[in-house]
Length: 485
Ligand code: PA5
Image 1 (cartoon, rainbow, N blue to C red):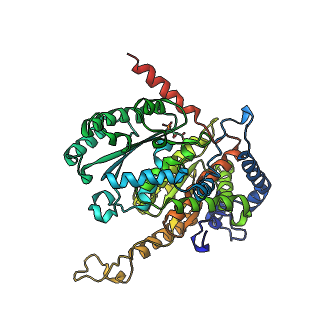
Image 2: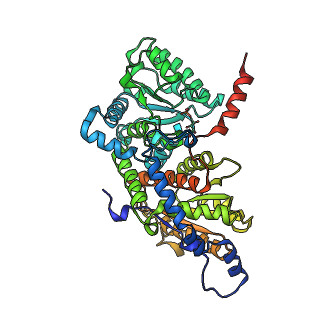
Image 3: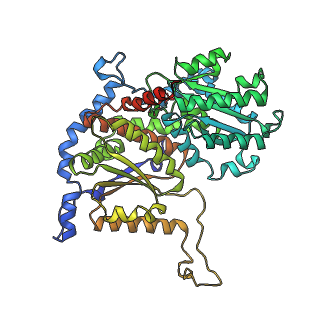
């Protein structure tokens, strides 16, 4: 179910080249750097054809070898998980996720998420956007029974992991006390990723030391999430994990498309998020993608506009300009999604995340006057979750802010955004707005699914397979060769 005012929209009217504008040097630049409506119209049949292609691909049971890899399972998965839960209740995949997560929440006050790339960035985006920015600093009762959350296994940084262990050894003394217990999920689809595997080895050692070598908690306070086969699954078997305590990542869903598999859903449930609302949001977006006409279809609009800007207007840098600090990790998640999906065959836009107004003070100069190689997609949230903080009157006015006493931070943010957009328009710098009505599980579900679908559509428009990441293997092979004793 989706209320109309909960829907995400993509507003690109400001980057269309104005059709009747008096000649000025800036107007001439806009004709050159802004999108001509005719180009968008010309592309339309191809966009609609790609949509049909993507819709058909998801139904292929045995794709021909030249189409592989084809990890299109993410498209229907949210709906399938909800349907399955309705029919099977606790025995469904979602039911299982919720049960394991409830146990984790009851049992521990600190929860580590081990994973890298697609096996971590989605969970982090959900955590940062939907939980308090100070979640880990809040007392337990203010966290409504959810543990503090930490992300590791996404690096091989010695000091970072050592400092995590140091923190655990200082704060977690007695395994009999809930507030001193910690748990972990280890997430790796392949089961062989070095960063995650080495962190897990160290954490497994620490856990055995803390809980005892044969403690039964080791089987429930560690929740592995992995593919149907691989080294991590083999290790779990050897360690005696019950099959139902190891969550499975479907074969036909690739890492960076896996936020709505146990990879994102299990950590989200431990964080106490409404995972059904996330899935409902994603489902609503899939339906809009498949059914709505271009004019109201944010997936097709975003893919078409950004594709044309990259390929026909020489805008290889794609800036996600984020107007809410809480969405920075969404930008990092999208960086990976776009770079790994489309950075192939010498092609692909370069993603760049900027958080505003912070980065107006670092990147703003370049975006206003630097090379004309960027399209800027603003990610905008219409309604803040917290009541507005007002500037207010003060006894001393040396800062000259009393004149703004009736303004709140949301007013200042809006003025900064509109002022920036206007400055970019005047300088013929193309911008568009991706608008979220608010930040909630439902809108986050829509947003992440929208960006995944748009990336697939864009890949098909470019003639690049958005799935797989063969280039990432090179560094791994070299690293392993260099480590050989
Ligand atoms: O998108 C991808 O497939 C990758 O970014 C993977 O998520 C990342 O390399 C981690 O892989 P794994 O889950 O196998 O450890």
